[in-house]
Length: 301
Image 1 (cartoon, rainbow, N blue to C red):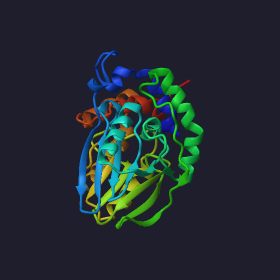
Image 2 (image 1 turned 180 degrees about the vertical axis):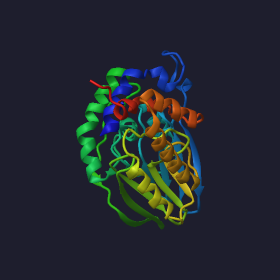
Image 3 (image 1 turned 90 degrees about the horizontal axis):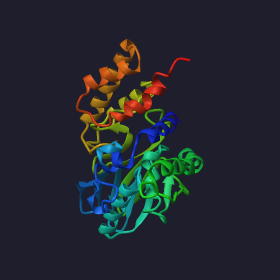
Image 4 (image 1 turned 45 degrees about the horizontal axis):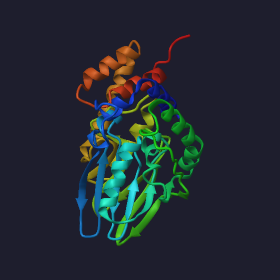
């Protein structure tokens, strides 16, 4: 909920140019920055692809699990142009999207998809589905008022199927679904492909981007410590940033440690931000700090 509230602050500070780059307003669509796609791992039975949006939208990711006969997609982007990139890529693969999973309730992972994927069957955890039903229309209205209909999908595709923890075999490929609570999101769905050693973590992990941390680090730390024990996974697909290896878990835990240390000494939000940027000068998504600082350091009456 805190992330949803603070995203409202982002509306006041972002412009279309900030999101799609410095191209002029009259530029053709083919001149804008594109989301980048890579093949993460491929076997005769399954190929996993990752799409990463530009850093101006915090490197939000979507993932495609390509089976022999069909595609599963995980998360649908924040803004319509990058969801269109995702659609173009799935079309190029030449197989139907039979399931579209939304990992958690934050709009940067579902708001963009509606115009590009109007007819997909969407799965989400029951609580996530209920939240999107309530909050999704308001999010579309807010962002459209600021950025216009070319940037913001005008159609909201709601989840109609509940996702649940468990194991399933699809086209001969084993999938494991699990739920996590109280980390970056209140609850989220993770998808594992044990035969490939792939763990689709989404916002449980960030890679090369500042973490979203307006509140306590305790729940996130607990979830990451649990993830360390799952030693069979070597490739991690994150919610923000490029696919990576197991070292990302330690990097995220170290970031939490740094945040806790800075919070003990910071004199206020500006000092906190300055210390964190000094500790991590190379991370992307620094604007996230400005968005959550009013929540972490509310103004005194």
